[in-house]
Each structure stands twice: as structure tokens, then as C-alpha cells.
Image 1 (cartoon, rainbow, N blue to C red):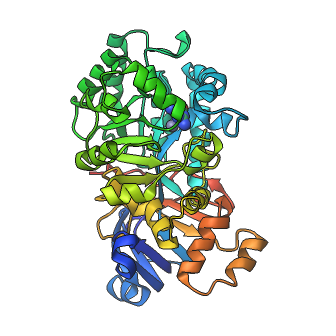
Image 2: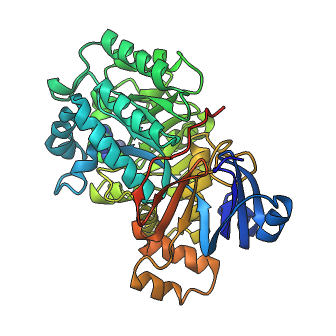
Length: 448
Ligand code: GUN
Ligand code: ZN
């Protein structure tokens, strides 16, 4: 038996379906529950009594009445922008020029990139985020630095080198198309499916990518199975007008990607706020996803994402912080703003739908629900122990919560990093409040 084989007990909650569709059949909740972890995977999820009966020799880690949920999944982040979180006063295009591009310039220095990667990943774990889909910069070393840290924690993360060859400062453009292609091929070869790491071909967005770069992005997508396409779509009205000028032959913004074969399963587009009916339909029929980034959309004044339209048309959607335009690493704080965005449009985001969104829903949007997102037997054991008493106020407020639904709603409203007691990756504890983020001590095993 390895030390990543044990029983952990507590109040266990996970989703098996979408609450807006399956209602009370969408989740399983065990008040005196347990997860059985065998070699980093879920061997059992259910009542504690049964777990102990079926696995009598396994050590027990007792978390009393603490809530245990699957690790949260963040479907769109920019790790190099960590240091400009909360930069004042601009909308998207000016924000990119004023803050983002000068900051991303610094990422040609491996030591700098490693330091920021370390801080970024520690911050994810502190917030209960166990998987993220992440932009690097145009510099290939930025991706090496990120994956090296991600791999050392055995996290399942997705990252890619940014591709861009127009409308940005010279210092941040790819040297030429061949170099961009070769560097990306090398990164794919080095990192895609190495342990739990996955690669995303990452054309930044239409304004910074020529048709030739988009063609290369498609060629790169065809070099290995399971690659992701990670980009931005219809975030800001000025951006949308610019895309219409740059790509006059495209039917709309989505078509500016589609024409190059870049819209399909595992294509993830951040934002998707200002979409036409045709674009919703096309996203749905191709199986592409929107990464909804509420704190960013409010911070940059981009607009209000229409959750109902995505649901009605059947568009996949995941939850995203979009750090650093987004203002918090916490998916709980991200849910807080997501709720308000729906409120402003007369729509609802229920407590159960919120926690589904942050876990299984996001896993589905990025086609990883066969591996993560809930506690089905055989899945990778990424999970979080919540702390309802993270502050005096949280403790007091939760002492007045009468149902699981109310408890979750309060967590997704006033909760933040202080609501996370411990974070586990592949069954190994990699964060707890007292010690902070800690690399796994056990020898890592290859993930098949
Ligand atoms: N669109 C193109 N690049 C970016 C970026 O870095 N952040 C956001 N929010 N939108 C973008
Ligand atoms: Zn972004």
C-alpha cells in the first residue's frame, strides 16, 4: 500500500449531471461520507460506513464535518499577468497596450518565468483550483517554466505559447511564421501528454494573428491527438468592430477562426459575450466551448455574458478567472460575480449550478470529464477540503445556513481562499493553510 492509498471521511459532495436539467438527481451528497483513494485515483465514493467495511485495512484520514468537493477547474487564465491583476482604468484594447504587453515582455527570462509560475501555481492550489487552462507568452521558455512547476505538483494543467504576428509591439511578435511553428512543435513534443500536462495551440486573438498565422495554428492542431485550441472571442465591442474590419470576408468573429478550421471539440474561447444567433449555433454544433470570465468582464467593462443563450443553444461553457484581467484566483469569488452578472439580466445561477460549473461543468467544457470533475470511480483524485470558518464572519454566517444549498450559496458569495482548508492532487495533499503549497513528497507515478 502506498501513502496515497487511504480513506478520507467528511461531508462528500460531487455532481453527476447538470443541476438546471437533472435537479436533485444532479448530485450525490453523503453527510457522513468518504472517498477511498487508491494510487491517486478514486476507488470509492459514498457512505463512510461502507467505505470502512469494504476497505478495512486502509488508513483513515478523518475530516469530521468538513465539506469535500472535487478540485475546481479554471478554464482560462494568463499566468504572466499575475503581477498586473487590478491594473486601473482601461477597457480591453487600451489595457493590453498599457499594462499587458509591457509585462509579457519580461517573460523571455527563464528565472523570472519560473518565479511567476511558482507563485501562480501556489495561488491556484491555495484557492482550491487543481486544473487550469493557461496562456503563456510568446516566449517558448514561458511554457517550459510553467509546465516544469505544474509537473512538480503533478497537476493536470493545459498551457501553450502565444502565437501573434501583428498589431502588438515588435518585441512581442513571433520572429517569423516558421520559427513560431517550430517552437510550438517542440513544446508539443516536450509537454503534451507528459504525465498530466496537456498542450494548447494559442493564437492570442484575431487582431494579433494574420491569416497565415491562423493557417499555421491549424497545421499545429493536426500534429498530435488531443491538442487544445485556446483563444479569445467577442469580449469587447471595440475589439469586435476591429475584427470585422480585419476579416471582412468572415461572417462574424467566430467565423474568423472557423474559416481556418480552428473551431471544434477542445477549442476554448474566452468570453463570448457579444455573439450572434449564428455563432451560438455554430459553437454548439462544433462542440467548442466558451470560458466565462465574470470578474474580468466586469473589471474591463466588457459586458454581460448570456448564460441562458448558451444553455438554450447547447453551447459548452466553463468557469474562468481570466487572471490578470480577472481580479481573483478564487473560483468562489468568480462565482460571486457570475451570479451578479445573471442577476443583472434577470437570470438565475443557483448554488448547485454554480458548484457544478466550477467542477464537472468546466471539466465537460474542456473534454476532461473522463478524468476529473467529480468522484466517479477511476477518476483522478483531485479534491478540496472546504473551511466554512475561514473568517469569523464566514463562521457566523454559516452557523445560520440551514440547508446544503444555502451553505453552498454562501460559500460562492462570501467565500475565497480562506474557505479552502486543504487541496489534494492525485490523492496527495499539496496545500494546507498552515504550511501553504507543498510539493508531493511521494515519488510521482506515470499517469496512463
Ligand atoms: N484578448 C486578447 N488578449 C487578451 C488578454 O490577455 N486578456 C483578455 N482579457 N483579453 C484578451
Ligand atoms: Zn484572456
